[in-house]
Image 1 (cartoon, one colour):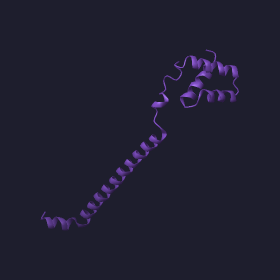
Image 2: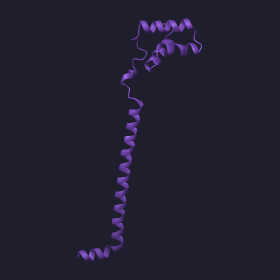
Image 3: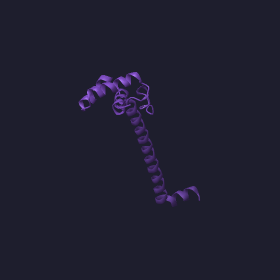
Image 4: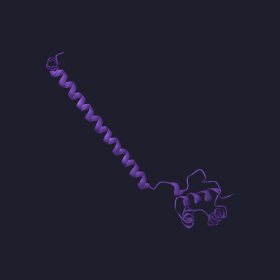
Length: 113
């Protein structure tokens, strides 16, 4: 196929949501010959299932950007919560050790040890 690069570019653009016409116009604006772009578009229309994009997921299976952002935000919020809990536990543990160092003798006498 003499215009594989153009055909592949057209497929990629269509997979990203552009129309074939918009993708063709992009190639024409980039300086490709009209005949080459039109031939690649005909090849694409006659064989839409050729495998240039086959390793990629179809567009409808991709997550929308807002779902990805929400997932990232919820993960970040969960991390913040665990960090705060860890800090509070360390403060409580440090305070307990401090009390034992300062008043350890009195505590042991009160317990009878």
